Amino acid sequence: MSIQFRNREQNQLTKWIGGRKKYTLLYKASRDGCTHTAFRNNCNNKGPTVTVLYNTDNFMYGGYTSASWKSIGNYQNDGSAFLFRFYQNGKWKPVRMPIVNAQNAIYDHPSYGPTFGGYDLHTFSNTVNFDGTSFPLNGSASFGVSYTMNGENYKSIANGHLRVKDIRVYLVEDLAGDTPLDGSWRKTAKWNLKLLNELKEKVEKYKPLKDLKVPQARILLVGQVGAGKSSFFNTINSIFRGYITSQACSGNAEHSLTTMYRMYQIRNGQSGTPMNFRLHDTRGLEADQGIDSHEMNYLLDGNLPDRHQFNPSVPISGDTAGFVVSPNLSDKIHCVIFVLDGSIVDVMPEKVIERMKNLQLRMNQRGIPQVVLLTKIDKVCEATATDISRVFYSPVIQESVDRVSQIMGLPRSHILPIKNYESETELNANVNILALLTLQQVLHFANDYMYNYLDQIEEGKVRQLNIRE
Ligand SMILES: Nc1nc2c(ncn2[C@@H]2O[C@H](COP(=O)(O)OP(=O)(O)O)[C@@H](O)[C@H]2O)c(=O)[nH]1
Ligand SMILES: [Mg+2]
Image (cartoon, protein in one colour):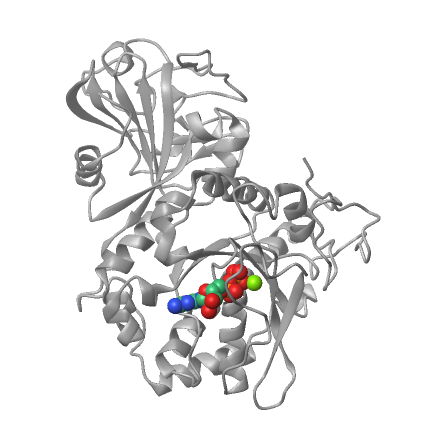
């Protein structure tokens, strides 16, 4: 038995859970570290998850919960939770152990790893170091407290110890809701001029939450040079201008064409007044240069001014020209868009992925929602190139979306395929619809972040502290 989570295991789980399911890796101890912070940063507030332990004697087992991990410091109720075993001594021996005391389905403590029941299975607390061959987990297993064991015990499930090669947590999502009957893999309203006008109007009327006195949602674009960050701004800008513009320089260049931080406004076509969101265009992110976590902290917290000149040889500090010393919520980033070139996601360098993961950590620490803009889909699927409205019917694009969702550990609904204007001289209704669907989605996520912030204010929990590492 190798360390994996393939069709056999996935199909078995789906049978136990019911319906049609899709699994996305959120957390991997061997990659992210066996620490409560890594687990919490990657898995809190994501939805139903399955935790899988790979023990050193080739026992593979774990637990499923439909409750979202949240660090509430208490038990969570979940009548559909269960523990399970896939392999015993490397042999396929699937067994499911259902919850009996639903009140105590999981114990959701901020300094704990995944913990099921009245400590039926407590994986670890705080930090466990890799000892060269395994993670000797510091949790405990009192199987049979909140779950029925169906004749199984600690020995038959885990060989009586908690030494594991890895712990993985996967997001469990519904496939059915995402697969409309007409053959498309993502449901949208019918694409026509009515939809286009409705979308435009919604974006024009968009307002961030009133109570927070945030005049504009701030959306940060992050990605490799040439991924299409500047082109996305140009595309949105063109839609509202009513003709193709290229205000933000775009093009192919070895290094980043964008060396200046720009907080682009988009003006409402009719009145010419700026709309209530800004797209922040940054310099590129490369394997060994470009935007790093240090810079990212300042970007996310709103410390850097519009037109800040990125200078790799001078690290950002309080002395940086125009440095915003005490930014408030309206200066901060409310949603991040990772821009990935859809035509090369298969060959994205490992180092770039690693860097993005690092940046994600900064965003997760702040609870900032993230989406992926998958650009250049016209280069991925010919049918879509000739008719952009085919995008959600294209199996190739669906596959790319799945893969990126795995790589980034984000739900598939956060992966948004797009075609930017690049060589066109005239607007196209379907290109506009897709771009506006995407923008609308992003604005929803920005609002989610602000709602969360509002909740925290009401609970008196907002710490004015900026997170720095
Ligand atoms: N075919 C195609 N080309 C695109 C698309 N988006 C951007 N491009 C091209 O990709 C190149 C890099 O885009 P740019 O916006 O400058 O990338 P940035 O470095 O992320 O700002 C330009 O030549 C664009 O015309 C797209 O959706 N389809
Ligand atoms: Mg650019």
